[in-house]
Length: 301
Ligand code: PLP
Image (cartoon, rainbow, N blue to C red; front, side, top):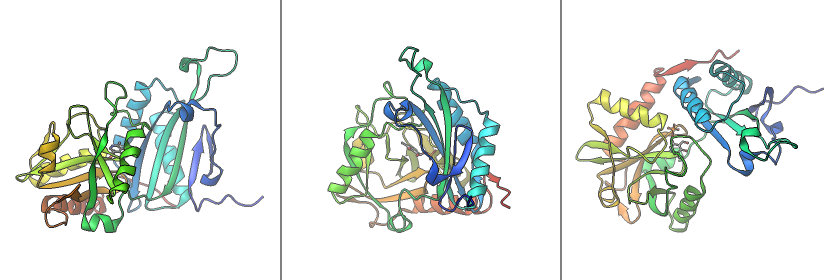
């Protein structure tokens, strides 16, 4: 028997570790067919996890809200993620944890209460939602025409795969020569984009939507950084017209950190370059990460 090859990534499914290329689930799972699933993603950079406990806490919250019930405890999930990163050997990684519901077995009612749920985790080389080059000159965004799915229907604080609206926005952006689409809610308020939270800067003050979006862990970091740097940061509604006139716009996500936006539709922000507050937050974020801010070490062999 040849040694398993962990070089392209590592996975854990329902109690078993395996190289990523061998990670497969049945096509009948409701996690796949009904989006009866939640997930979270934590980053590893400079060889350490960033805010691991915050991600585990949010994941557990999502699991409970969707009435999923994996057997692993929070401590065990942390051990599994650590083991996967160690097997991959990656010092910069995208580390995903999913909890999916199975199809209920034959002979019981076809109802989610009868489907067991289990954990799927995997590790990939680090992922940038926007490339370092796009971040350097600022991302080109549009406001998408699709409304973000209503929070009354799908709770956006539960990290989910209901991405139909976000994917539609991404294609619309492509058709218009842009790179991403920020979606509004039915009242015309800014929500979020495909994989990130959104911020705007007005007269030196930062604002981010108070509702209608995932409570991003990177967003939490931005709020902390603003506090440290003496920049006012408000959680409030941001309507379209106000947003379109913002001095600066930036977004935040695990897979990329703090990323400036330099175009919104036809409007060029600043001189088509990242704004000063966005740049200061981004630079401070990465400096602090390098210094071990909110880090959980990994004992690589
Ligand atoms: N909003 C959505 C829809 C996301 O998918 C993500 C991350 O994947 C975020 C916001 C940012 O959250 P975090 O900073 O916790 O990665």
